[in-house]
Length: 202
Image (cartoon, rainbow, N blue to C red):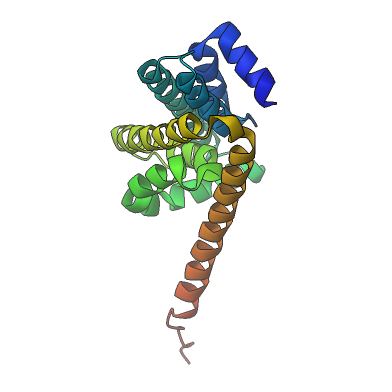
């Protein structure tokens, strides 16, 4: 996988990595972490300019984020009055709007680089709940810039072992994402248990 990816990047250039990253941020499974590490390795070998790699990578990630946001916004807005599962999800997204407006910025930021498996779902949810587009874009850019920087630097330093490093980082990101979901569900259950029960009036 690593050799094929490096060969593809050497053949098609850094824009190919940006396209791969954009597709991955939409939610289609792609070796995005490996691509960023490969960009760092290419820069270390002198086959790519590190500043150009950074700019193209952030642009590709941001393009995918924006696509997910607007798909979520357009589809969910049109589906809110429909029956069935899609309509139900859209109505739940509307109910979640106040919470996402309050915590959405930090949620978007953390899902870019720390809880990366949650990135695409957060993109769609942000659009569905009509999270402020400037807020989404600002925090998304900040998070993507941090993610790209971390992985390109790691690829630059550990270029000879990027495939093993990508597997370790991918498993760590998934574990952190599952931990975040479990913590959120636990908080919701605790909050629900603490609600005062209304006694029936006689």
